[in-house]
Length: 486
Image (cartoon, rainbow, N blue to C red; front, side):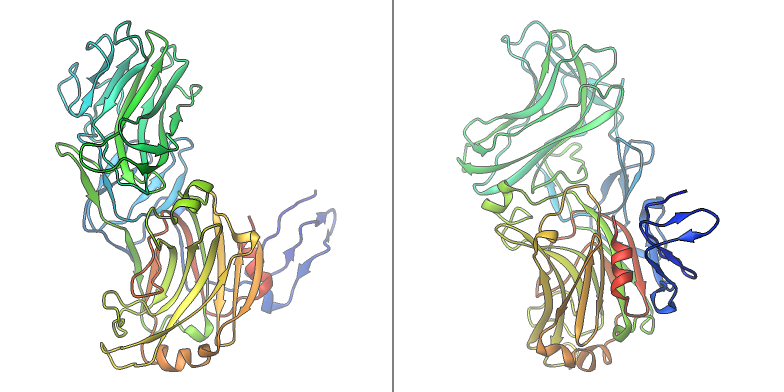
C-alpha cells in the first residue's frame, strides 16, 4: 500500500510523502527524535465541528444571522458567537468573524401579503403576470416568505422581473449586492441574474451575478461587487434588478442585501425598516494569567476569508472598502495592560493579520512594547513586528483555507503559511519586550478573527476561523511546515 500524506503524531514516527508499506514501512523522511514530535496543545478549538465551547465569548452589540445546518437563515442574538454552514455542501465553515456592515436594502425579508407585490420591491409589469409577488412556497429567511418572480408576456418586452429599492452610493467606494435564489426543477430557465440598472451613478464595473442554472430545488446566493466612480450626491442612484428568461420562467428570491465592502457578508435583516446595521464580531477566549507564557509560545490558526486580493480593489482602494483597512485573524494579549496613547482598546501582545497594499497582501506578526508601564498612563509605544510579502503569501483566495503557524521569542520570529516557512529577525527593540511588559502584565486574552496592532485595530478577518491551537513551547521548523500543509 502506498500513501502520499505527511502527518505528525503525539508519539511515534512521522512518515514522509513517499513512504510505502509492505511487511515493513520504508520511508525517505521519518522523524523519531522526541523534539520533533508535536506535544499536546494547551488550548485547542475546531469550529468546523459545529459546536461552540462555553469559553468562547462574543461581544457584538446587535443581533445577526447565520446559515444553519438545515440550510435556513436563522437569527443569532447579540453577544453570541456564530457558526455558519455552507449552502452548497452542508459542511460547517467555522466561526464567523465579520466587521460592521449596513444593509441598504429595505424590507429585505420579503414583507407583504401572499400574492401581493412585496414591500420595497418594484415590478417591471403587471402583477402577477410579470414581476414579484409574495410567496410561501419556498423560503430561506426567518419570516418564511420569498418573492416569486415570473417572466410574463407583458412588461415592456424586457426581461426585468423585479427591482429593489433605489441604491445611493458614494464615489470611490466599493459596494457588494447579493440575494438568495431558488430555481424549481419544474421551471424552464435559461437566464437568471442580478445586476444594476445604473441610473445616474457610474459603476466600474457594472457587475452581473448569474445563477447556476444546473442547481435546482436548492437555494444559492448570487453576489456582485462594484466601485462607484462618479455620480454620487443628492438625487443620484442605481437600481438592483433581477432578470429572467424565457417567458413563463419562475424563480424565487429572498434576503436581498446591498452593503459597503468588497464581499457579501452574512445577511442583515431589514424587516419593516429601510436599512439596518450589524456591529462587528469580537470573539475571544479569556484564559487564566498563568496559562500563557510568552517566552514559550507557539500558535496555529486556520481560516478562510470571504474577500480576496484582485485588480479592482487593489488599484482603487484597500481591502476593506476604506483607507487603511488591514485585516486581522488572531491576537494574543492582555486586557489589564495600560491603555494606548491613542485611547480605546488595549492591544499589547502578538497578532497575525494581513496588510493591504497596492499590489500584494502581506502577513504581519506584530507586538507592541511600552516605554511607560505605569497602569493606565502609557504615553508612547514601540511597534515590533515582521512582515512577509513574498510571492508565496501575496494572495488570499476567497473561501479558500489559509493555515498559519507562528512562534516568537526575543531573537527570532518564525512564521509558516500553507506549508512554507520563513525566519525573520525582529528589530532591536525586541530584547526588552518580555521584561518590560509581559512579566508585569500577563497574556490572558485570545481574540479570534481580529488583531490589535496600533491605536485602532484592523478590520475583523472577514470570513471564518476554522481552528485554533496554542502550544506551550517554540515549534520547530519541521512542525510548522507539517501543521500548515494543505
